[in-house]
Length: 169
Image (tube, rainbow, N blue to C red):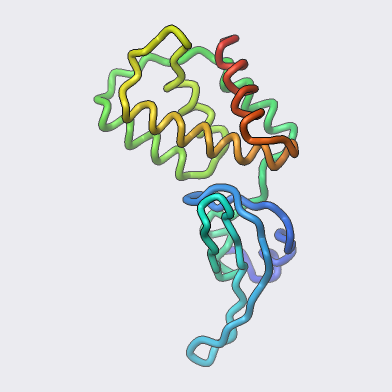
């Protein structure tokens, strides 16, 4: 378990962070509350897109999966994942859908890229089901949001860039 000091050193107020189940948020501050006679510090993280504010105990932040947004060099690795060939899977859709949701909720951009790659259908391919399309869009939005923060460009531009990469695969 990470210590309070290491969590506080790792994250700074004002930085963008990723919380696995909610995606990209901004670390707005640190608040202190007294609960049952114990003083506890909380990171205050806002997720403007979801209109959500999360208060996460500082000493539980790393354990809960809070991390800094990915690096620019890691984004190149993510693009490489999108260019790889899709693996044919024989699992039932319900099992694959569970696996995809789990990968998205992990908050790991590489795993999210794998979901996008596996669910991507080209412009001429309309065989994607409603639930496949929903999971694909959720994964695409999650990854695009993180890349847009890292590269400081609009999310819609990132989505276009990702789709161009997918078409090239």
